[in-house]
Length: 435
Ligand code: EPU
Image 1 (cartoon, rainbow, N blue to C red):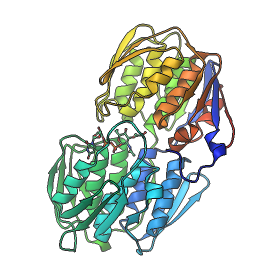
Image 2: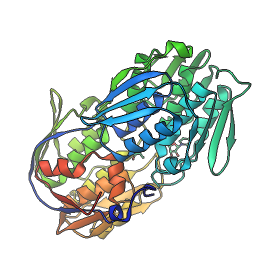
Image 3: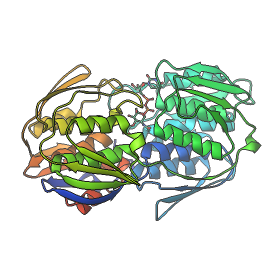
C-alpha cells in the first residue's frame, strides 16, 4: 500500500536499469530495518533521551518516528544516520490506523506499550502482502503473562487483567516467530517475575534488541539462543541509552546478488560474515568468491553462476527475505534449481515479474523450479514489496536492454539509497520522477 501522504508524482517514480559491469568499488552496508524499527519501539519502555546510531535512511523509519510521536515521544531524525528519541513518560498507548496501515512492524509496539502503560490499542497492521500474517502467537504469549485481548477486524486492544503489571510466564512457541518473540520479550522486561521463551527466534536483529534492553537495565539470559529467560524489573530500574544499529544482512545480500549477476569485485563494508554464514555458503556453492575483510566481505564474481537448491528457514537458516534475490540469481545460473519456501508459502508474487523478463520459473505450492537462462530481457516490471523490488533491480542488471521498475515506494521502505550505492560501483541504474 502506498503511504497515505504520498502524492501522484511519487507513484510515477521509476528505476531504470541496464546491464553494465563488471562492478568494482566499495559499498557501506546500512543499519538493519528489521532491527532499528524494534529498537525505536523499545524506547517506549523507559523515560529519558535515547541516541540511536547507524540508522538507515528509509521510509519505514519515518513511519515509526510518526507512530512514536503520535504516542507522545519526541523523535528527531538527524543527518549522519542519527536518531534521538525523548521519552518524558506522558504516553497515549494508541497507534493510529493511518500509520499502522503502512507498516507491519507497527505491531512491535504491542509488547512495549502494554507492559509500560497497562493497556494498548493498535490498528491491525498492514505492510507487505505475501499471504496471511496472523498474530496468534503474540496474543497467546501475552495472555499467558496476564493480558486480556479484544480482537476485531480493525484493531487489537489489550490490557493487563486486574490492572497492575504483567507477570512472568513459561512460554513455548510452536514456531520461532520473530515478531512474537519480540513482543513477549519486550513485555517481559517490565513484568513481575521471570518469563522464559522456548523456541524463541534468534535472528541477529533480535539479539540487537536484547542488547539495547540490557543496556537500558533489563535482565535477559540466553541471548542468541532459542531459550530466553527474562527477569522483569521495576520501571524505575530501566533508563534510556545509546545504541548502534546492527548492519543489514538483507541489504548486504542485495549487493552480493548485484555483483553476482554483473560480474566484478566489490567490498561490502560493515557486512557481518557471522550473521550470514548459511547464505554465504550457498552463494559459494553458486560459484561466488566471498572473502572476509577486517570490517566486511569481499565479493568476487567471475563467469556464470551454478544452480543450487535452497530452502528458507528461521535463523540460522536462510532467511525468506533473501529468497527473491536468490531466485533472481538462479534465473541466470547454469542448471536447474529448486527453491522451497518454509516461512511464507505465498511469497512468490514477484515470480510473474521475473517471467516477464524471460525467466523460466514454475511454482507449485511452496516450491519453485528455476531453469537458468543465459540472459534475461529488459521489460517493465512492478515491485510488489520491499524484497521483491530489490530483486527486480538485480534482475534488471542481469537483462539485455532496459528494465523499468515501478512501485519504487516499496523499495524506499527498506533500502537506503539502493540506486546511489549501485551507481557508485558502476551499475547501470538511475531513478526518474519524484520521490
Ligand atoms: N506467524 C503465525 N502467527 C504469529 C506470528 C507469525 O502464524 O502469531 C507465522 C507467519 O504467518 C509466518 C511465520 O510465522 O508464516 C513467520 O513470521 P514472523 O513472525 O517470524 O515474521 P514477522 O515478525 O512478521 C519479520 C520480518 C520480515 C521477515 C520475517 C521472517 C520485520 C518487521 N519483519 O516478520 O521481514 O520476512 O520476520 O524472517 O522484522 C521484510 O523485511 O521485508 C520482511 C517482510
